[in-house]
Image (cartoon, rainbow, N blue to C red):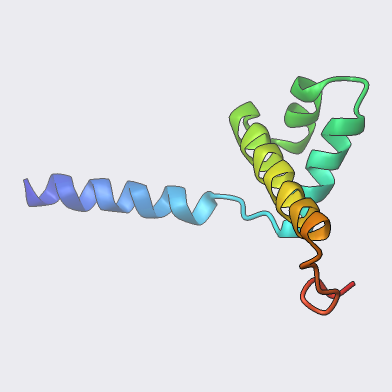
Length: 85
């Protein structure tokens, strides 16, 4: 039983070390490219090596953050220093 747990933890550690980490800039670039893309999301995801659901998760986060900034602009609460604009 302990050997099985150690093997499972080893496999988990290997998967974690091989996982790609995307910066915020890369995520935004990919989402914007998907919004502009004429070839489709599937092609973009294949080219970038990401799963479709990951793209749509990033896209949802991107749209949600845009809504919150828009709401702050409408309510007059946007501060340029806060967003480094």
